[in-house]
Length: 93
Image 1 (cartoon, rainbow, N blue to C red):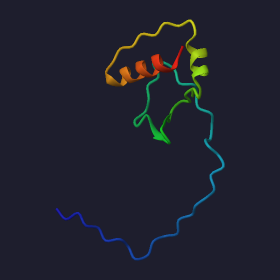
Image 2 (image 1 turned 180 degrees about the vertical axis):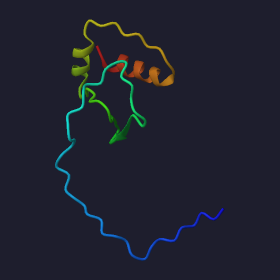
Image 3 (image 1 turned 30 degrees about the horizontal axis):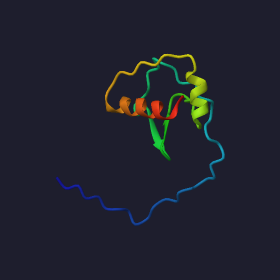
Image 4 (image 1 turned 90 degrees about the vertical axis):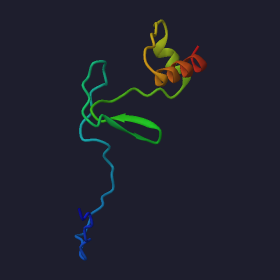
């Protein structure tokens, strides 16, 4: 099959606006068991951003320590989960 498509000689104007609004309505907090849409989100500047909910971001080890204090964590999964286990055991007290 021929997959070539000719680009038109005249293209309509494209309007570009300054983006001052980072979302129209606040998204609910991400929770266990939520069914994500597809695609579920995107990575921007090494940060996963879900499209259907807002996710807590931990910027310092102290914030992680505060969240996990007094909790037991069970890891089940593949090498990705192992990376999380290694990160937490290396960075969290």
